[in-house]
Length: 397
Length: 124
Image (tube, rainbow over all chains, first blue to last red):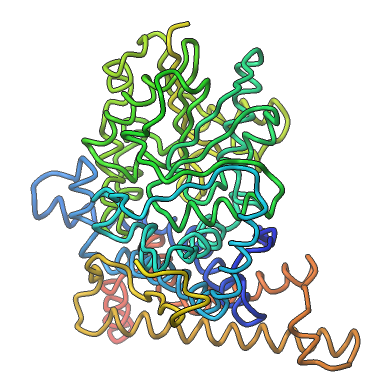
C-alpha cells in the first residue's frame, strides 16, 4: 500500500495546536485517504451491477447521464455509506482544526497583526464591503462560518481555519505550503510561454494567498496582488506572506468589479475560484479580466475540468460535492461554455483554450509529464489525471 | 462588526456548524447520527493510540519529562509511515462489512446462492 505521510510546513500563524490536535487532524486526513483509495473504487462494480440493473427494471432503460446515475445510486446502501463517510470526514476535518484554533486565536491574531505591521505591501479591507450571495448563502465546502465571517476588525480565524483545512482536504497533495496550484501554473507559464515576463500580476479570489506566493517566487521583480471578498482571509494572507518573507499586497475586492484601472495587469490568474462563483458572476469576471489586462496580457484560470471531458459516471462522482459538500456551483460551472464566455468578453477565439498544467508535486521526467497529460481522468486521484485544468486566453497585443 | 478583540471584549466563539442543510444519507432514522458518532469515537481512539505511540517512542529514546517531551516531539518520517499504515489498517477493519459486500458484488456471492446451498445440503 502506498502510504501518504505528506506534512504541511508550519509557519508563524498556522493553527496546528498541540499533540492530540495534530493527530486528530491527521486522522481526518487518513480517513479521507482511505475513502478515496478503498471505498470509492467499490462504487463502480456496485453501479455496473445491482444499481444499474435495478434502475433498468424500474425504468425500462439503463441510466444514461449523471442525473439518472445519481437516481440509481442514491438508494444503494454502499453509496450511502461512501457519501456519508465523505461528509463525516469533512465535518471532522474542520472540527479538528476549530478546536485548537479556538484556544490559540488570541495569540495567532496578535502574531498576524504584528507580521502585517512589518510588511511593506498593502493590506486593504473595507468594513462596508458587500460579500456576494454565492459566498454568504452557504458555508462552502462545509467550513463552519464560511470564508467571510469576521468577528472583529483584526479577525483572521476563517483564514487560519482554511489554511490548515486545505492541507487536510487535499491530503497534502497541495505541497508543504499548499501552493501546488500556483506553482503548477507558474511551471506551465515557464514551459509554454518562455518569453513572457509579467510585471503586474493579479490573483483573483486568492483566499489566504497560498496560490499567489509562487508568482512572487517565480517573478521576484513583479508587483503581485491578491484580491478576495473575504476580509479575514485577506488579513491572514497578508500576515502569512510576511511570515514567509514575501512582499505581496492583499486587497478586499470583488473579482466581478475590482476597481482597478483599465490595462493594469500583464497576467491575471485564479485558482479554484470560478466554481465558487455563480452563473451571472462568471461572465462578469471574464469581462473584468479583459478590461484589466494590458494588450498581449494573459488570463489563466485553474479550476475543475468541464463535464464534457469525462464520462457520465465520473461526472456523477464529482457532482456529489454539489449535493453533499455545500458547493452550489460545482456542477453547474462544469456545464458552462467557458471558451464562449471568454470570446464574448472580448478575447480572440484563437487565443482561448483549455490545457493541463501538470501538478508541480507530481513533476517527474518530461516523458512522465507527457504521459500524465494524455491520461484519462481517474477517480481517486486528488487532481484529475495528476494535473490541473487551465483555461488560458490572451488579449490581442 | 466589533473592534479588535484582544484588548477589549471576549474571544469570539467560533462556529462549529456549516450553514446549509445537512443531507441525510440513510433511510433508517438515527443512522446518520450513529455513523457520525462511530467515526468520532474512531477518531478519538486513534488519537489515544497515537498519543500512546508517542509516549512509547519517547520513553524508548529518552525517558525524561514525558509530558513536556510529548509537546515538543516531532515524529520522523518512519514514525509517520508507521502511523499512517496503522490508521489505514484500522479503517479497513472498521469498514469490514462494507468491503465484504463489495467483494460479494464482485464474486456474485448472493443470498439466493446461500439459500440454494442450504437447500442443497439438506437434500443431498
